[in-house]
Image (cartoon, rainbow, N blue to C red; front, side, top):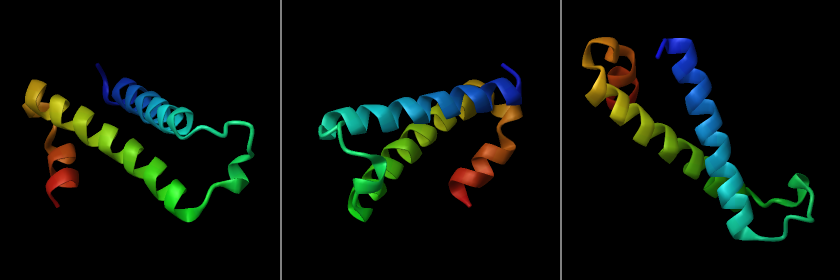
Length: 75
């Protein structure tokens, strides 16, 4: 998987994590503007957590191509 393909994949996975959080929260009839800051924080945390999991797998699976990811996660 190229870096661009991986970025697109991670973006989709982060979007899915946010969607799952929103569905789990309920109240889908409310507009996004009705979300509170703690709710936005929780949604962002889910997306970031998904990125970290995917990046960790990529570092393990492709260590030669993962220098930037390693620096991002550990820096």
